[in-house]
Length: 229
Image 1: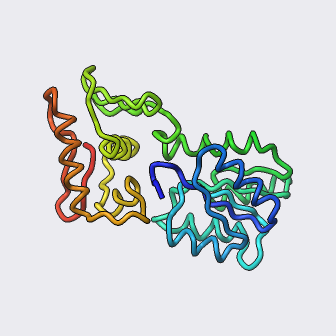
Image 2: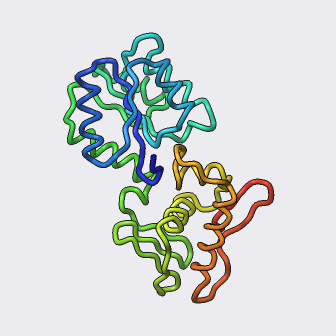
């Protein structure tokens, strides 16, 4: 799977609603995984952390509220946006859902168009490059829509892998990414690539970023990985 394409986990026990959600999300260009209960949802997240979760409140086995609580209590999944779906329209239920950690709360029945807009809004916050945003750090500007990169006003020539690497770094400046995390994000889990390949492409990215001069903005963190700034 191409991790440059955002992934969404749909957790909904009603088959018809689950299929409608999946169809519309795939039509928007997202990769979609499905679960019809809370236990399977937690297992899927453990296997591959999605970029966003659409989560029904009322689920068999483990409720949506409990799934949300568990995921938001773990450092590795705390930052994954969760949109809670519920037929509960009382203010106290909405407050409970948000206090448990849900990033958004949508009441059933809902408009598919509105839900897709909410999905894009959440992803703009966590995966801005995937939503066509312009990312900037100091004198580096990446335009995800036109697929162009400038540094100090000069155009840089980047291959597709280097472009995805730079977008990943620009989305979270200062964060240290391990080689395994970069492999997952840029290449995808189902493609076997040696971790040394990451070093090769980071080297190419460094060369491209410094082609017109300027300091190397990428930092090698010994024993940990790489970071921007």
